[in-house]
Image (cartoon, rainbow, N blue to C red):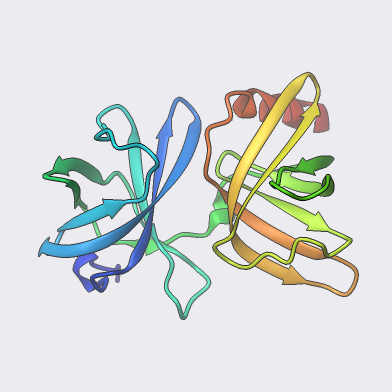
Length: 202
């Protein structure tokens, strides 16, 4: 039994996952008002004042229940401009989404943490996929919580990788803190890099 869009309370935070040509990007949004069982008015958190056009990308919608670690996903939703906001339409029920379905490649590369006003910090990129990545922080300096954003960058195999992610998982272990992220930016080298890295491991 899936989850109906109308079951989400007005004011619920959702994530729109945009994909085009193997690249992914995530946008935060809020359900403002339900119009029908499968249509809701949403507001999208975005830096631009221009109206966003979703006609050339595939859009999935994710909702993270407060009482569960597994997000609910609606695939191939439709978003159209509606006055100053947007109308979201779904065509199926939401289902539980295990992010581990997205194929991850082990990386084990040192990356630079890009934070304003702080000295240079380094973390280890543990694994990476087209939809997310995880890092290990042995110095336990980051002190991140679920929902926080972080940008990291590293060079490997002739590729420059710049990643911005939002924390979806925190594991505090005795010797290391591990953070899992959903990817929030488009990195043009990512798809090529993962292909090369995957071939290298075979």
